[in-house]
Image (cartoon, rainbow, N blue to C red; front, side):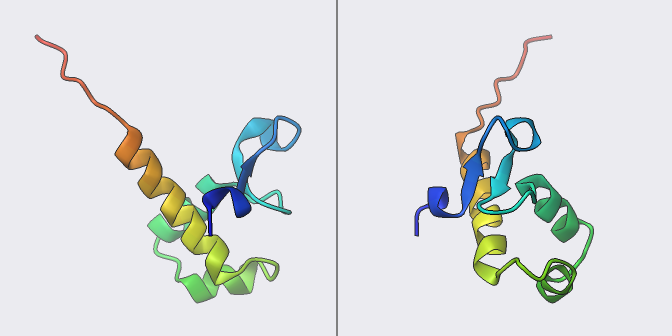
Amino acid sequence: MPLSDRIVADPEILGGKPVIRGTRLAVELILELLAAGQSESQILDSYPGLTREDILACLAYASYLAHEYKAYPIPA
C-alpha cells in the first residue's frame, strides 16, 4: 500500500504536518511515542481509531525521510 493511502499533509490540518489519513494524529506523535518506549499495543489502546498498518506507515514514512536526507559535512 502506498504511503499516500495512509499518510497525508493538508495545510488545513495541523499546519500541514504529515498526519494519518482521517485523523489529526501527526506522524511525529506516533514516532515520539514509539521512541519513548510505548509498545504498539499501548498506542493502539490509547488511540482506538488507529490501526497497526497506520503505525507501520509512520515507520515507513520515517524510513523514507531518513533515506532522502543528505548530510554534507561543513569544512572547519
